[in-house]
Length: 224
Image (cartoon, rainbow, N blue to C red; front, side, top):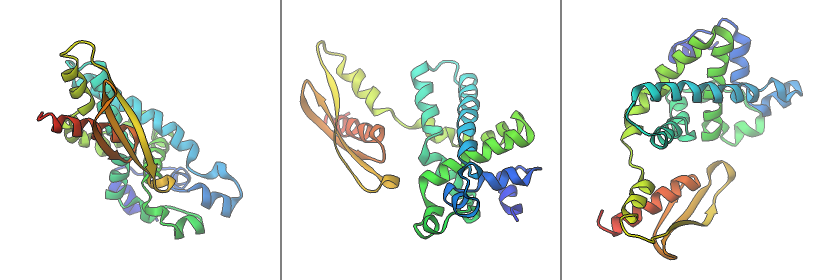
């Protein structure tokens, strides 16, 4: 039933019930079993920690010259919802999800938040099925190859902060101007201010990304 998915992941689950649970959304578990505990949510909780640890260990060993702040940024970008959902899309995980009727009709199989959660649950299922090395293999095979693109991405907020700090008594601050869209696809609008005066604006799928966009806008206006 899940042979093609297992081939794509690169791991064959011995306990198919774990794999089944990893693909079961709470809406399906409630409709079919009247038991939310049979969904992937508990696995997602475990998978999130395993993914964070494996990624942190790899970055620590790979970048001995990077400071804690930069390592934290790279890890956050690697394990973010957008990145994990992209991996899930490449694996066609949406085709294998077990969703309740309403969630299925609402496009849940392509929803970024769900795809991200399932990637974490699949990692946890591999951990319970084959131990830490099995889970680590999946992270190394599917998530960490995205590192080169993530590591090269600019941290506009840090760049702006370092530039502004060249002069004394300069204060940067960020402000959320508003947000729009449904919960699963929100859009945030932020601005960055220098000594109380707005110097840039940006829009993103999270507050963090909106602030990065605002900092990027400010740098561009400064010719940097």
